[in-house]
Length: 425
Image (cartoon, rainbow, N blue to C red; front, side, top):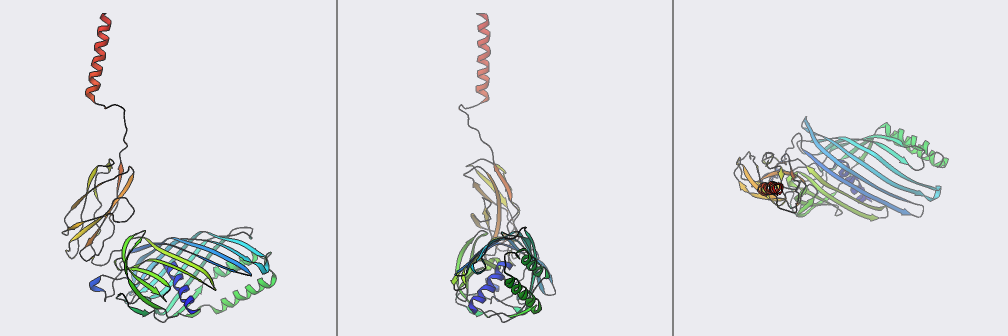
């Protein structure tokens, strides 16, 4: 039971925060606490499914979170202040045999906005606030119900999840902490309006029972929850492909159940897949990094926007140039994204810092493309992506005969001569 509790808490935090807030700087400075910069951003997509079937009823639910964006907004009083935004959607089916209740629930137009406070000195999570809004459609209710609720979580002391430096085989436990949990009055107002909407379908004893629970929870808030200590282990390293690209990452297991992939070069986790089946039901969840503009301290500057032809022909090679600098004067390799999927298609050789380089490419298919480039120094620290250059193929036409002005002039001259001699005859 306690393992399930740990996994549930971690999954909830990961899906809502989209981050394990413990960045790393580079292989030569793993023992130092690195620094985030204002404007650093990570974007994730995630979701999960839950189902349980018993003799008295069935519950099935699926949720998705899109464009879950975590961004460093400011640094204040030795704390990072991060903002959190995203879109959320939920579909559920509930059937309870004992009260003859069967309904579907849809959470539409869901938006989440939040704030995260993390210690700059030791990178522990200190506080988390989240507001959720949207519209809930219940098949038994006559009208859609507007939903708005807020939650706040404070960790005393701050909650530390990861322990650096990471290394294959390393084991540790998350720190002990007390979670102070609170919810806004909006949530209770919504629940009470929901009970009113379902009053014709719920037996009076159920309505009274639920109302008693609501009143009891109100009196208990804020809840104090002792965070279970979780066993963590770094299982190894591997290259992991996500929508944002392919990154070298550590595989970290939580209680030997929940696998998490953490990329040093991005100072964050990049992928999570979880699946569990037991007496409490079946659950699976996933989170994946879709984009980021984070670059670690010591990485090269963002390269200049590629310059070159913007009107191209299929199959013909064109040259494109860019340049950037490295603060330490390290040699730089350039990674080119030719098809606009934010994944490096080709790395160049290494060049001196500040030297403009040129690469050539030919597109096999007609279309529109966004050409980007990023830089990587000798220590494998990567820059942010450059601004994209929009490239488009020319329209081409096929004619049955070869066209030339010489042929056109000779045909015209022959036509004039034909008319002249035909008149004389």
